[in-house]
View 1 (cartoon, helix red, strand yellow):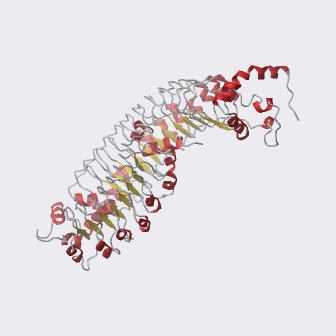
View 2 (tube, rainbow, N blue to C red):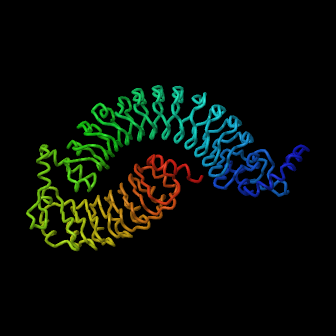
View 3 (tube, rainbow, N blue to C red):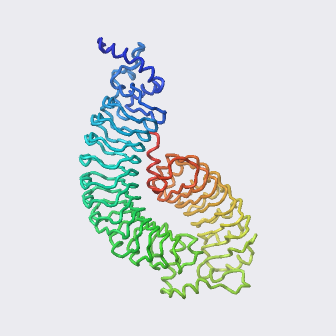
Length: 601
């Protein structure tokens, strides 16, 4: 079988001979040949200032191989080629696209993010099969009205452009995923609410002062991000968005928390960095499914007892408010993470706060059992110690189950400290702020009891195997030592949930950490870490917090974006260029999404 070639077609081929030579210089023929077979072509990161003509005409022109009278096997017959359905030309230097775009009507995915586009051609209307269009990180000031003709479009990604308005007819699209973050929008039109199929909407980092009440009609919306705007209030009607699961309102000017009487599926509410002064029962009583509540950096003075209604709550961030006391009933929640730093708390000692979530909750529960002593009694009791000649705080040992020999600048822990344990049950050991160069061997004597160990601010250069025998250990603080590695035997710490390795000398994330399945929090800031393994990290199903601030990371692997269990990812103070600071400021969800967008396909 052969294809007839009339005079017109022969002339066309001759006319494009020069273009073919130009094309071969920028796009390997093997890549085009593979694209004809697979229907997919990836030209990202090739420094292109324009897309070669042969790419637009890939479905039209006879391939170069045919002109060379080559024989074709059954799998290479060019006349049976697949139309191009996916074109990726991201991370180039494109300033415009030609109307020849219309020659690729079968496209379902067009990815042109990270270029220098200031406009889109009107021919984009002819890509009727387009389902995903990524034009993020360009210089678009307006969108052509023709974009509203793309009725099969499901995902539209316009973040990091210079858009000031949304075109008429936009609401007629059947979008499920829309990202307009990091633009210059000052308002959202009421007609926007007609995007009734929308599941994810990102309007963060614009200049929005209000949201239209009509948005409540978006009954399928699950994920709404409006961080970093100028919102002072949220329309009460938004509370009827019954499918809403994740709501981000950080870095606005909110003075009160909205009520959510019908948002019974809401799992995460992020309202940190606002001006919220009061948290009342009415704000909490409907949040039956809430897992994450972020209230950091507000002006809260108290937390109501009704916080205990949030029975599903796992992560509560109250840091940097004006809270002076906490309801003891908070201890009854099964929190995995409680942030309280930056508050003028008077009823909980700093030592307990520094030991982390579980110790704070344990302390609050103990106060309930004490039938709620007065504030003054509480302070007197927790401050009580034995006479100064004693070397062991027996009160801390018997009442709080803590073996405390901290802040002594000792090079060894005296035997009498361990002897004093006797038959007491000890769950926590605090040997911080000494001059220890090795872990005391007698710590093994408490291996059946200890869950928390604090060895911070010492001179440890290695971790001995004694520590690896503490199989009930859940919290380990090793910050401010001189460690550069961890032993493989730490893999046996199967209950370890939190490890603090900040201010040491690690150059890589210790390999053994990837193999501790219960780990929820890894703090390894202020080291010299130059790399992490995203594939291994993805397998850490419980990891929620990863602090890599102030290390030597030259690049962040895009695959880290697949670590979807992360709720807090801190990357500031590293020498990488991307993600940019503006992305880091938006928080973990935005960082992960940014990284996922850059995973090579």
